[in-house]
Length: 370
Ligand code: IPM
Ligand code: MG
Image 1 (tube, protein in one colour):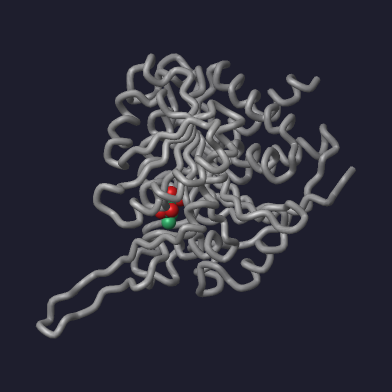
Image 2 (cartoon, helix red, strand yellow):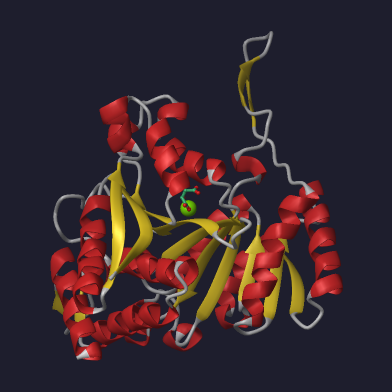
């Protein structure tokens, strides 16, 4: 049994630990049935880390995250930490990991499972078969731009400042990821910005266009304004294959794309850094959904996004595409079989708990490999 695959699990807050428990179940299944074992370490992040250590991301946890092959993260945040200073808020732990690990390319697939097409808020025919990949820039833009802050002016009024800033290398490296991925899919990239009002948008369009002409002329490239893109996503989502956009637009558009699929509880994500000398990329995998404090501890959360994030980890960090396919097929079959967690519950289906769903997945994995 090979044990060279190092994972750090940061379950985080709210439903994070519950959904991560089901990933552990799948990891256990892989060790028992596929002879693939992982060296799994655990740590705290977000509110859980703040409660224990007074910081949402300790130096030790960050060092661990830098050393492993991949980080699996659950979710961070909750009303309990609403009044904590920004630099200690749970979200700061997640943003710190992204920035320090330089995870600049955030892959957010929005895939409609056949069995769930009717759960979408859009008409079924608009979303059946939908398969979009949003590549969101994750370490730059207004999330990290300086100066930022709230200042008090001489007359006592206040002024809040955020800075949207991008350099050409920041744009080029994330666009390159999008073009490369498009070649393995539908060969089409929509580059999304607001070049009509923003300087960063003008630069974005210019850099993406140059890269396209130089290295990816075989890929279809379309430029689109972010507001139009939001509209097109709900008008005719199947026109998209790969979309590449900045940090803030990517945050917003990926929530919108996620909802097209019927549930935020279904969507995984991968955050990847640049390749080192050995071709290895730092990587963090997390569900797109948040910590859902309203249902935390009830055992009702949907673990599928977290399980599918683990499948992305197998695919992108360990080159285990076959095992990733296996997990994705198991998810598809379990849904087709009629099992549902509360968030995706439909008439005539059988409602299961978080652990019930995890058990169904490993049973299906047994069937698929048996
Ligand atoms: C996301 C989340 C985060 C973000 C929050 C939790 C900081 O909304 O991953 O989309 O804004 O990036
Ligand atoms: Mg978001």
